[in-house]
Amino acid sequence: MAEHAPTALDRRAAAARLARFASRRIPLDGRRAAAVAVTLVTDGDDVGVWVTRRAPTLRAHAGQFALPGGRLDPGEDAVRAALRELNEELGVALPADGVLGLLDDYATRSGYVITPVVAWVGEQPALAPNTAEVARVHLVPLGELDVPPRFVRIAESDRPVIQLPVLDTLLHAPTAAVLHQFCEVVLHDRPTRVAHLEQPVFAWR
Image 1 (cartoon, one colour):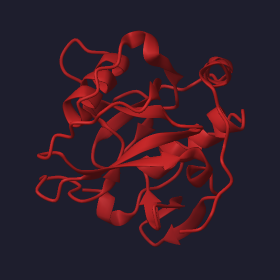
Image 2 (cartoon, rainbow, N blue to C red):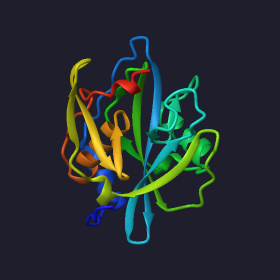
Image 3 (tube, rainbow, N blue to C red):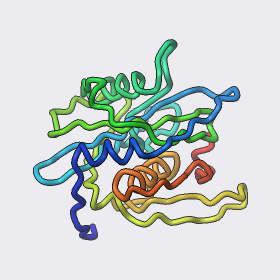
């Protein structure tokens, strides 16, 4: 794995940058609402984000890299759903005051509108992953997450497909799009938009 310089970030700076960012919502238009948690976790002097590998037995998107999350239950908003899914998938009960802000909605080809919820976990707690949903959990240091994305073209779309070279592989949208915007907004204070970025065809189903 290539060496990356550590990226310093504290809770106050992350919250301030998110407060300056005017996140955008997307109408459902028949799609289902979902939320994911972008979790800032400290590990010694480093800060990272949890990225999961979905269980190979799942009916949809099995084995793909993801962020903790899922569809909203009736009566939930994105924040409550993201925190519930974080607890259900990783066994981490985070209070609502750990939430720092929202990133832009991302509409998927499989029929969801995902709202990314950025939260501060602090010192890494013991995890209890739900093995029915999660095969593995990676804490990706910000220095490894903050990498230039790749953009490729596919015949099926006129939109650029984003690829993020992380974890010795390529992460794809929606996860790659969300994490790219997270790095731009929270690490660099740049109001970068990603809703136009495409998913690979294998993720359309």
